Length: 155
Image (tube, rainbow, N blue to C red; front, side, top):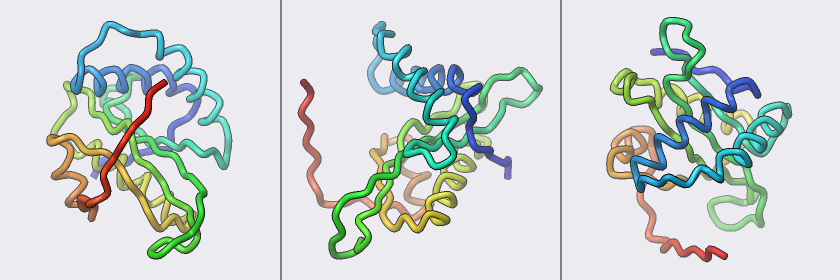
């Protein structure tokens, strides 16, 4: 299995590049206004030792300095409840593999490393939104569909 490593601030531009690939695969857009703010958040968060946002990456083969894949997530503290007494949960997002490097287990390596980091932090509940293409990977890692309806307000 290809080893994933924890992302560092120098990976921020590549993480934004991969995020654009992921977002465009779901809904193509020429809007790039989000990229600057995303880059700044990544640089700040990835520099912190105990940041809310964590990402794991696999470097592209050949030493090009590019990333082959990534997975990011945030840890959140809420109120405890049944099934999650501590109230600590995580949300996984930004799972993407560069099209030139797909079907090699890179995203799996990134998600597994992210989940291992959550295990070390005693995070008991991990959620994500899955595309049809990603669902088999997540199911193989133990994720299951929930009956909870999702709603969103965008202002």
